[in-house]
Image (cartoon, rainbow, N blue to C red; front, top):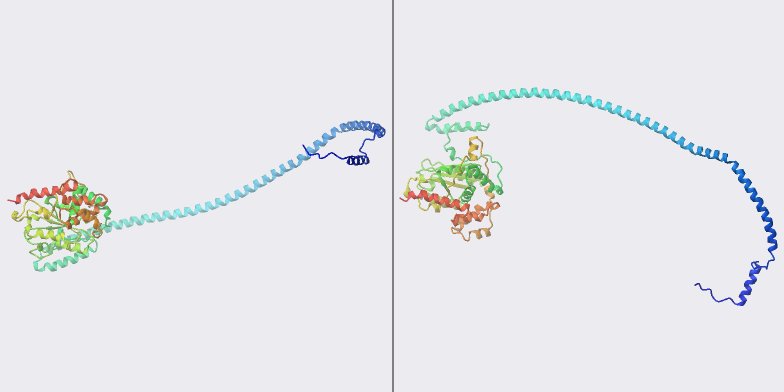
Length: 489
């Protein structure tokens, strides 16, 4: 409840009454009712009169209803007139804009059509010119082909005549006396050099060195990276029909300084297979004979004192340390092996041999002097007995089709090498000379991308033939044992 405060005192009540009286707000006990009645009577009459006037005014207004309808209609017409005028103006403006846009489009199309016509005329002119040029080129091409055919015919005739004359010159040079051989050889070399400068390789007089003893210095194709080494060896072995493991063992052996000895029946093919993978297919053949009785005879021919094939290959390897040189000592059994072979093996395993000189040898059961054959050849050589797979090998098919072999070569100066710790760890348990074991491991190291090098290296001194590489070495030793049994008599 609101707080009303204390009740008024008597004095306050008297003052409030006085104020209300002065404002004439207190009842005056009916003294003003009479005048009020008189005023109400007059007001009632006036009110009745005014009510009658209101009814008359309503009747008059009701009489003006048609005028109201007219005014309402006129008002509606006045409101609709601006909309009709606006619609008309809008239609006029739209028509004007449509006509202007149509005129601009027609003008643009006319200009574009004129430009297209001009461009078409230019292109037709260029096409006509191009057709004329093509016709002229065809004519010139036909003339050039005709001239080329005539030139080829003339060249063929000249070549045939030149070859005929060269055959006559060669026949004459073959019949020159011995004392004139030097002059004849000089003339032949001059003519050969001039012809080779023009793309012809002609030999008019026999070179003192047989072709199979010469070292080629051909322009090499790009060398293969050593990361491709296992793949290249495998591909070359399969193309020639040999087991890849046999070629791997042979390569590790020859690069370690060993003389890999093969049966004469397959020595040339196998050495060539190895050379295709490592030396662009080049094999220098040193044909041995009974005149060889000392190691020096492997450097100079005993009767003529001319350089041997082995000497040429050695010199080429020294002169170009990047390229491997493959030598095949053909026919160990035709010599007195015990007089020179131990010395050769010592040289090959020593530091004097060029690391890029790779030596193969061939041997058969028939020897010139069985009594002088060493009984411990297996300790000097690395005998292998590779067998070709049955059927015609891919290399044989390519040769029949007269297709050149796909050769490769590797840089001998960048052969991957193991760390000293790896060498010690692998060779510590070797049963052969530690230096020899280290050379074998280094030679096997490029196989690390596909085969564990230690596995191949251990096959050379464990002699158990457990894996494929050991089996290759065991088969080679068995072959050497079989052919040497006839030497014991």
